[in-house]
Length: 264
Image 1: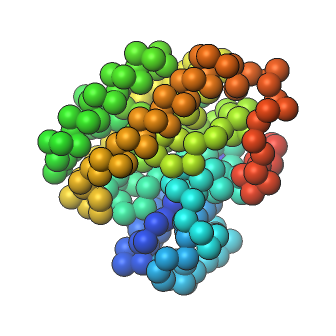
Image 2: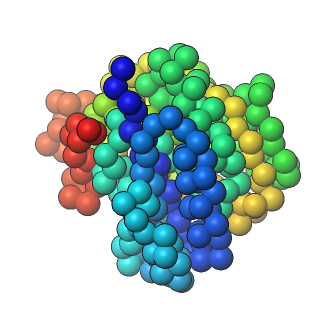
């Protein structure tokens, strides 16, 4: 069987204090895995010295990208995916609130279930969660049930910052996407399901929410996320925007276009 090539996308926003340690932690995990790998760190805006500090680790296996304006986490993840070469593509938030040791564990789950997508879930029975604020927990549960109801996703958690995809899923999904900030996860998952990728499963993670920089929930963030989510529902269920028949209506960004089948 052909050896897997794993691409790990790491979006980074104002992470100058931790980015070097974060990338080293991720690579230390990947070195223990029986596959080739690359780490693609995307710095979401020239807002501090994250890019310069991450650049110290630049190599053939750790690639650092920067664009000057902040576009949002969703844009950063898609930007990294567009430059990936792996037949398996993951993304993991910087800051390490999600332990990178979850990558090989989720990859094992992906193989067991032959998943198209495997999603890290704090609600999985084997997950371990520390310091998760009650306010965030309540919002997370409410958002989960809302998206489960309107999109039909069977997973227990859509918002965690660790997900792994087969490349062929992304090749079909990415050109159709519009959301660039907080609701990009739900757009990716719901569009994948719409396109027939029904093997979407969840797996366990270890999360230390005390490491998450923005532990409070801003009302403006909640409103933006809900509006983006409802916009995805409108495009998916009402105007059928994501269908191949509407290809001419899709909004293309050259920087976000994924190369087809480049894994070697």
